[in-house]
Length: 418
Ligand code: ADP
Ligand code: MG
Ligand code: MG
Ligand code: MG
Image 1 (cartoon, helix red, strand yellow):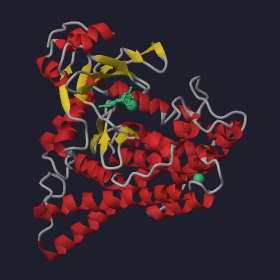
Image 2 (spheres, protein in one colour; image 1 turned 180 degrees about the horizontal axis):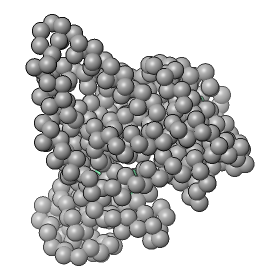
Image 3 (cartoon, helix red, strand yellow; image 1 turned 180 degrees about the vertical axis):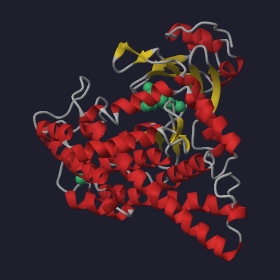
């Protein structure tokens, strides 16, 4: 596909480029000069264009050689576009219909064209507005159960699993962002940190001196770095999910790599919990969002319980992978022991999920990248109240993970805080 050198495609170059890709030109239709091109990227890293022609529209994502949020002073490899495309391709096979259809990819330009999601909106925006999404639990639990199970040693041969790890091992610069921004910086003085000052100054200082927390976050960091359990999305927050009331699509897997499953499940749960804690800050009349808040906590519970059910169903239906060889679990006693082991595995995965969820919450309140759930609460004192509740729960989840043996222990504790 054409280009033999990377360059940032501005509107005119993009128009020419797309006109030269026959499939895309047909999808768009009409004269290229009449295509409407708008840059809509609101993420931290990349450019995203919406292109509309006489026949239809597409979305085009191009990676920049640096972090968009920070600028050219923070370089970042273009290869992330390759990993994002690879992950989207795998996810499309494993969880059909839950990612945007892929239309075109150019590794040199770090560019991917995909299905235009319309009228979908970023889920986080809907949650800030207090909108409930009835399809979400079923779709996200299917997405996670299928992408995680089928890329794990429970489903794959040892050879295929290790080929999968190798295919994503080069995405280490994106992993390093997570290792620094989520697992390290919020717990030390770092230039990029920020929080709602002065209200959270004392809490920020306490995080830097809390050695129980430092041990807990370091264990989680090591788990993130050294547990290639499955192909994880790696950035599965509510800003990476586009929704309508009837459809769910997962986007933006540029952080994908073989890592711990709980990192994805924890991301979803953390972002729902933050939507819950932020909700009080968005109400104009007291109690106005109570039904929504109830739905959010109900959704937290069901995301875990449906993920658990679907993952176990896949495992019981026939795990062809090299983990847990059937020949070692023959007969009724073997079957019973294997089932007990499945339960133990999921309990361990739940504990990972709780820890990673906590890490995801703390980074959004004290680290570099914040989220609009809290940021759009204009009054800083009110914002700090919501954030402080979220941090209280997160600290308990991280340091006393064992005292949250089930998902209702998490939602129960959240409910008690507001
Ligand atoms: P980044 O990696 O920079 O965060 P994203 O992939 O999250 O980029 O995309 C940024 C924004 O572009 C999304 O928040 C969404 O508004 C829009 N977007 C991305 N993909 C699509 C798509 N397929 N259809 C419509 N809009 C999209
Ligand atoms: Mg994004
Ligand atoms: Mg991204
Ligand atoms: Mg609330």
